[in-house]
Amino acid sequence: MPGNHRQGTSVSDRSREDRRILFLQGPLSPFFRLAGERLRTAGCEVFRINLCAGDWLHWHGEGCVSFKGKPAAFGAFAADFMERNRITDLICHADQRIYHKAAIEAAQARGIRVFVTELGLLRSGWMTLEREGLATLSRFPADPGQIREIAQEVGEVDFTPAYPKSAYLEIVPDVAYNLTNEFLWFLYPHYQRHTIYPPVLEYIRGGWRMLRAGKRNRKVAREIEDLKAEGCPYFVLPLQLEGDFQLRAHSPYQSFADVIEAVIVSFAKAAPASAKLVLKTHPLDAGFENWQQSVEGLAARQNLSGRVLFLDGGRLDALFERACGVVTLNSTAGLEAMQMGLPVKTLVPAHYAIPGLTYQGPLDAFWTDLKAPDMELLQAYLTALAGTVQIRGSIHSQQGTQAAADNLARRVLDLSVNEPGAFVEPPPRLAAARALGVPL
Image 1: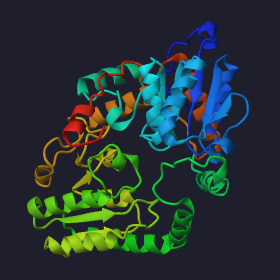
Image 2 (image 1 turned 90 degrees about the horizontal axis):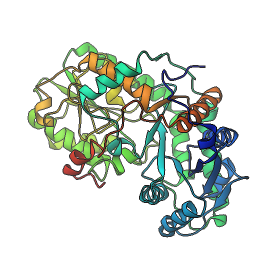
Image 3 (image 1 turned 45 degrees about the horizontal axis):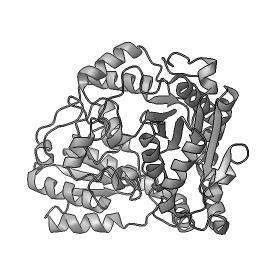
Image 4 (image 1 turned 90 degrees about the vertical axis):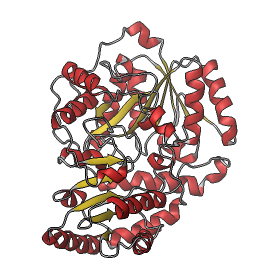
């Protein structure tokens, strides 16, 4: 089973017995329950607070309690729970959910270690595991020199793709979780979900789009081939989901419509007259927003008709093959573009928005001042990531879920998350993000 190059120095059995670990919501997977079982087997006390019926479905029994109050009361509940149970560590998936923000604040005020998971920055077969916060709140360094030093200490990492996705594990646990919440809402009557669309309606719309995905993708593949045959320079803006916390919490924009407008206006003003701008939908977009109508209307108002192309489907890597550059809010698509050698401009301080990797000047200048990423620095960044804040595993693979649980438990036990040397205070991206209006 693939593993990280460095796992850290194990703590003593006695210190493991003193660890009292609290889990909150995890991804829609057995991942957290399995990790909790491994930590309990290692001698830790393990607790879990369930916030809704779907949480209970994924994990109930020993060490589990339920919170059924209003969201505003959860911070005080979590603080009291932590004190009464002498919690030493908090683990949750994503750091900007309503309940998780309150719990993290309570934990940090009490000197409790915080570990946050998310889907991996490295794809595929990786999960993110960081101390204290993610994205704008990440403590991972943004200084190229520090990153190179960490990479040298981490050493060689096996990046071989692992744990292919199972469509069943990608869809069924999500549906089971949300339908349980819908039908048993009265068991947790005050629960407030972190998603922005009603799950049942999202499944209906998403299912309809899935049925038509083949036809859409074939159409887009032809459009991409036609675009390449034209030979004109073009830039790519990958769309992100309207409910993505990278947009909602880690950017100053109220909607991705604002991002689209900012990019198209800048393109109209400063891009070469021969260039085109290509916008592509996210593969999980359920179609609530009529992005095509918005894009075409805005392009017409900016006198860009014929120079802005909207693609509803298809593969990003096919677009990246001939692109001049990529503009992104903070999507991991930017990291994928850099791995193909493309210049990238992020609109906010993304995790990978590091001098030498992404364009550091204003967006208006990016269109004509294209600088490819430093590939040696990029490799150092990927190596440093893999050795410190990524773990092997995947919630969309049965074997990958087992591996993720093993690696999370080991790294938490060893206190090797963000090690060696990948923890900087204050969060190195936060000041720049706040200067742009990010509400953190």
